[in-house]
Image 1 (tube, rainbow, N blue to C red):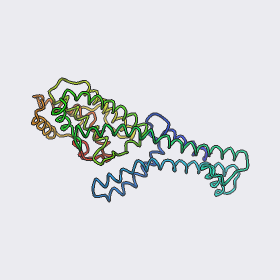
Image 2: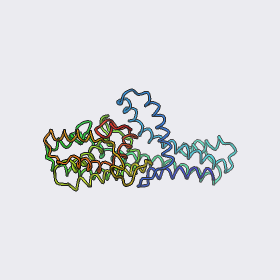
Image 3: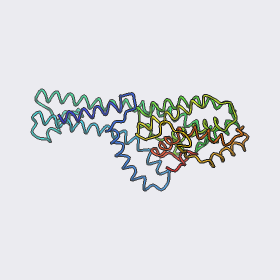
Image 4: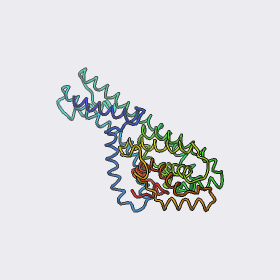
Length: 339
């Protein structure tokens, strides 16, 4: 019974990780990734530069993902070893031998009794299913990763590298026109919706790093959200509902990803009861930089600051927590904050 329980728990873990189309944190998967992260943290302590740390962390998610399969196979092997032993096989070594041969379909160890034959067939089926699940899982994950990174790469053209909300507004004012920002916010609203779905059902995606060290989906998200918040609060243009919807889609996505990783946050924050990580002096510097480029700004800077803080407080904490656990690169108002 203990062996059967171990097999059921393992199979249930694989179903929750690979098959179930919703964000449920599986304890076994979580334990595997936490254990590997502990080992990676030992190497990170010796790294002297961010480039070296980024190089190390680039391997974390792939190794963690691939480590799931041998972990599940080992647990299934141990569970069936106990069941084979309970059916009358005297030696634990022989029971383990039959279990391993059955799981990997090697065929060098056989069973004689009907119950043992049933166990052999069921274990071989489970082994093939686990391998097939991982093979089917990887294309879906890399497809979602590719769609995510396409938008992150394009943002470099519009917001610089590292990305900056101020730079994004300046470039649109200089090249496209501020009225074109709404289309960008609308496309990122869709991006946030897809990231929320993919990064909770395929949670390892959170830790898959961008192809270039200076990019990150977290800093890209922060840049777009800050650009929308600055546009609504400081830029003297008609209020665009697409910017408002983008911010809402963004903080809902970040909060739900944070909930998956059990990161606490205030469900209904208000400024100044809940402070933000961006200081008034940083906001004033951004305001002055935009004014120097001829961007039309609201005359009441105090009210602009209060409005910006009112928008930023909705995503400030979860954004910084995501930057922390993913070790996001330095960027304006996101990767450069004090964790």
